[in-house]
Amino acid sequence: MKVLITGTAGFIGFHAAQHFLSQSWDVVGIDNFSPYYSVQLKRDRDAILRKDKRYRSCEADICEFEKLQKIFQEEKPEVVLHLAAQPGVRYSITHPFEYENTNVGGVLNILECCRHAENKPKLVFASSSSVYGGNTKMPFEESDRIDTPVSLYAATKRAGELMAYTYSHLYKIQAIGLRFFTVYGDWYRPDMALNLFADSMLHGRAIKVFNHGDMLRDFTYVDDIVDGIYRVVMADDLPLYDIYNIGNHRSEKLLDVIETLAQTLGVTPKMEMLPMQAGDVYATFASIEKLHKAVGYEPKTSIKEGIPVFAGWFKKYYGF
Image (cartoon, rainbow, N blue to C red):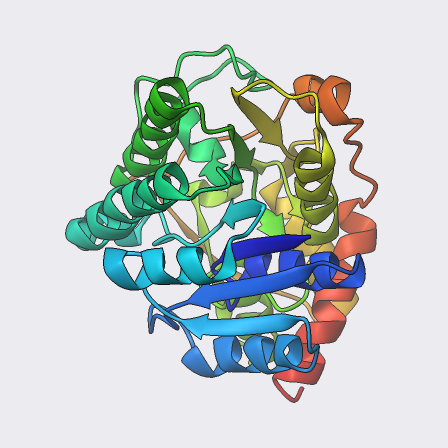
């Protein structure tokens, strides 16, 4: 079996590729090594994947349709796992066109490639908990309203869901979307909160804590996310199109997470309390009942277990 994964030099894509390789799949990885964050970190992830002879690394941009289509035609994957995106809620406020290009135009290119592929691959694609916007009902369920996004990033991820539905309806492409909730773990993105917190703590700087620490997040360990992805890929009885939450089904207080990280690193954190940032939401909390019923998804990693793994990797990789 062969899977084509976009974004394999990224955080979740790297872990997903490793898991598929461990299950004896052939993996075709596509990444453009965007400078949005450290290209060296992405190269290091890619170098690990390249050690497996069943992995093919393709440096390409999903916004380049002809190049993307050529890879599809050459490789003929049975499954497409679309994880590449322009990430970041706050960055979308100041760089809107990058989100339109990648998260809308890039998704359209993936859908067109699936449409024209002779073997009609199964498509599993990444969405985001951000589509729930400012919803206050907890936990978030797939049936909740999603027509009030509070960031452009959220709007583009919702657009991707809608386009996938349209292509599934028109061209009978199986398309399954997964709404990720605050994924963390080793080989983490340096722009994400835990990474920023750890870096500041170990350098003795104050960490920036938004909304004065009054925030809740459904932190989900990357291995649990990858397990859920793989279960969805392997399931042969899912609808032609559907959307599922994939999270930890626990909403953690941000200040508790900071305390756990500080204890793990053996430091006393300094905190700079700041107001809520534009585009942010107060809380995320995933209902995972639908995914559990569909594929048996059940996250296993608590914050107390996951943060030490992340912290150990962080200190080793960055030389602390």
